[in-house]
Length: 158
Image (spheres, helix red, strand yellow):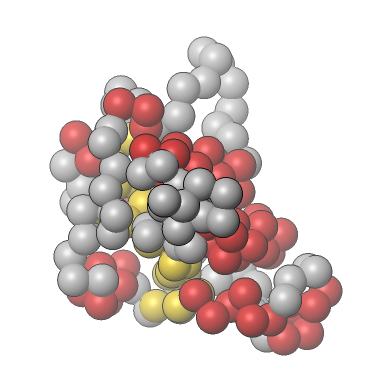
């Protein structure tokens, strides 16, 4: 349905939660190196993940390789440096959603390569810190999926 791209994620439990989210929402997850952890079977068990949940996870050396593999999808970057709300976008199947690392966000070079209208943010109270990565990804994926009437879900499929 959607492609979730995490740019250099650092915190294993966040990525573990997003792996589970991608499995439950029918999304594919792409991790851009360097990662702040390993994704071996032992690490997944320790995080409470079924190793088969990794079947929709791909690891890429860099963002351009990932984007090319996805055939140049419509790409949205989530950032606090935008005035465009995620709730004002009409998402489509195959859209790719890019999230920066928990500690640094997206690098300036990546940020600068994305057109302003493709940069989105979640509403927040002024002066607050950004949401936890797993929470932010969950909100965006469920909003995008809601717009498609939760296509493919057990509860809402047509």
